[in-house]
Amino acid sequence: MKCLGLDLGEKTLGIAESDELGIIASGLENFRFEEKDYQKALERTLYYIDRDHIKEVALGLPLHMSGEESEHSLLAREFKKMIENERKDVKVVLVDERWTTKQATRFLLEADLSRKKRKKVIDKMAAVVILETYLKMR
Image (cartoon, one colour):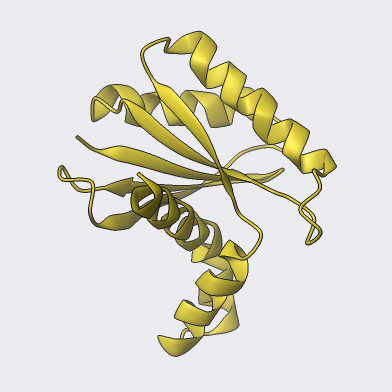
């Protein structure tokens, strides 16, 4: 069964998806929306959930380096509720995302992508790291 990985920001939603076996995570999209228009981000998430019959979602939980919750943590928790309210049969798991952008940036640097190209795909790659973390946890 496929799983979805999400990296939610104020204007972008990085989206990744696993293979059928739940082993390999691949980036799908860097979805852009108007600042703080989380309803659009939800609609895009629901599109993938419905299209690919997703039953599990790994959503990045932004924490301070100390492990304490941030303002963005509350946003992630609210977005989790939004998904669960729309699709009651979908399990949404919050995944610590403290190092995901740094890891994703390192991968993209190793791939020798220019700064401009990295900016276009960084959230999608962070979603891949979030999903890979979740798949290892299960």
